[in-house]
Image 1 (cartoon, rainbow, N blue to C red):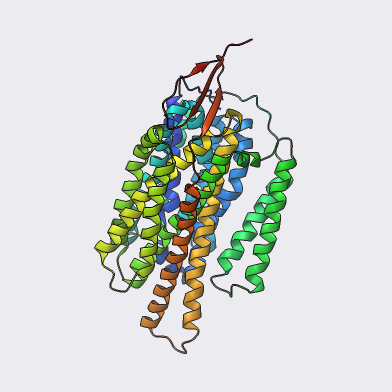
Image 2: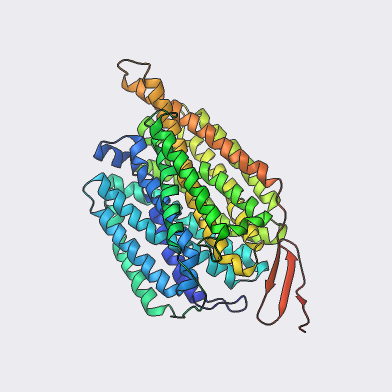
Length: 495
């Protein structure tokens, strides 16, 4: 990896990584508005079409545990070029897919590439800036994470309505090729001398464990919750994930160092981020389904409703990073989660006649609340880790974001689909109005469950404290400070 220091950040490396990550995040949320169109074209259920999103997040959750190994084994240039090449291959397959399984394969290959970029970028940012500037730096990271979804829904809505969903991938291809060429020409090739070991049993356990768990959760929408098809993979998945974690704790050089969870503020930040992501990502799918399937809105109208909220999250994330540098994480997270919890609950009261303006206002306030959560708690957690654990911390952060998002989507869409099926099972020959009513009831129930996830994050935020970080720099300077408070760097006399 290119050598960076808190004194001289490698802005060339950071800029190229941010550009690649931006395209990856754009692809992650591009299809949310297009899901109803894909569902109709392939004549599949809502529970099935969600695999477009959950398969992407599932593969990310499986690949991300290997990124700490990759960052120790290979240079940033090698990782970036490999990741973008995989992303290009996946986008090509998805763009020219003629069947739903082919689309899923393309999305999974895309995810294998894009999921490597997030931990790489986060680790580079953390290692490039001193603690007192990390809030602002991570705000930039969040800008990428949320600005892509800001333009994604509106742009994809226009493309889907004017052309087809395939164009969402095809139009990306020349941009990805340009990024690859620029990265090949400009990124420095600096070899790593760090020790790294690929533990094959860990990779197998991670893949089977998370795969089985998510498959079981997704199956709950089309089958009874207590059926063997649902419970068996969930049970097997939980056992395999437990064995995987226990194996990491015993390995001298684990694939993912779960010892980072011994640091309290990192653990609390992970719980808050995971709980809020479970409600946040699912809402990005439920709102388009409500607008297009229930209210008959066009993809463009759906994109325009999502646009202001996503812009708020994009542009205010750097501001929340600067506020974090000044006031710390606790009250930012509490206020933000109060707003997010209340508005998510209010989404559970939707009716056929709910106005566009009301939905727009709720979505914007919810987005405003979330800008005060993710950047502060994530940065505070990373600041609680010693420098040698930052690759593991960034990999685990990225993995938990993807896994929690995938689980949130699987659970809430399954709740919606399951409740809808239950309601319709009581009607012999349901009319379209009765089908829409059942779907609406399912969406409302899903948002209510989402508000519970948000409330869990809110309760956890009450225990946040500014993290103390200890940085052992090469010149013998040791910085010990509570993040969010003014400090003086203390020089430590070397013996």
